[in-house]
Amino acid sequence: MKKVFVIVLCMVGLTAMAQKGERGNRGMKDLSPEQVATLQTKKMTLALDLTQEQQAKIQAINLEQAKERKAKMEERKAAREKGEAKKPTAEERYAMQNERLDKMIAHKAEMKKILSEEQYQKWQKMAHNRKKKDGDRRGKERHSRR
Image (cartoon, rainbow, N blue to C red; front, side, top):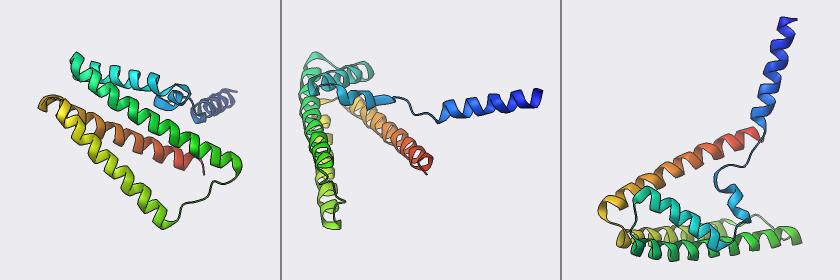
């Protein structure tokens, strides 16, 4: 009886852990670009102790990026619904990757202009940690889908 109870308890625990919940920014897809930008700016303000001037500049950058992300997301969603979603060719993947990297370089340069040296170093460390965490999470999700 004791063994059966332990086995049932383990099964319940594993089932609960296997369920995907809302994590991190996934709930942000329902928010408007303005709301997303405001939340991102406030998080950065808390982490980096931004001045009012820095907050205003970063808010503008975050808003622009949030609008671009929302537009791309809507574009992909519309293509998926129409059944036009297809795997990009090697040339298209190269172009998309190149565009993404160019935007990242430009964003980094903008942030360097706005932030102090100390804030910039901390921001880079935060970005590195976020990438690492996202990569770890993606790897786990990939393996769990099999």
